[in-house]
Image (cartoon, rainbow, N blue to C red):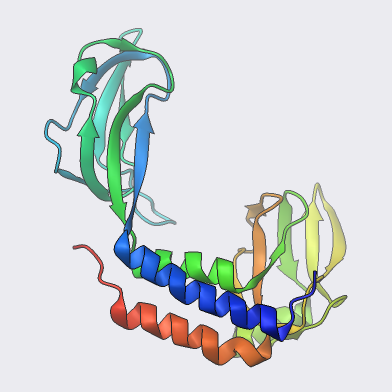
Length: 227
């Protein structure tokens, strides 16, 4: 279904309401489950403690150790998947054998500005989706323009062949399908596989750029991150 101007305006208004909802509940709760069977020992002992998540690539450190599972005399650590506050620990499981998938604890992860922006933009923009798991590249002329002037210098139209899909040593061109607009966000990285169904680019109709930027500015100025 094409994106009309009225649809775009409605989308931006909904996004502003979403930002208000996020302010009212600025976190997500992440369940940490046993990845396999074993005897559990908790490395954290009190609710309210903070755990660190994994570091950023390319040199990525694991997160804080929150528990251990012992199986066949092998003691394997369980790391926090995100930075956050531990709000629940299943202390009754301490020293007991658990099955894979058993909930062990819950981490309350407070959203960063970037995470809020990512969520809002994925709702506000038109997302062009990868049709299959593969590596994706921009065609040379588009890639060159993005490298020198940024993605928002590129206007796309339905049917433009702007991608190269690379899979199993086979390369084919891939046409953009969607509303005319500016490439606002690029979600993929060259030389890395993208799963089918994941977004490649986010496109913004040109007459909605100011409205989208207003939302971005609001997040940058109003969102308070937890230290």
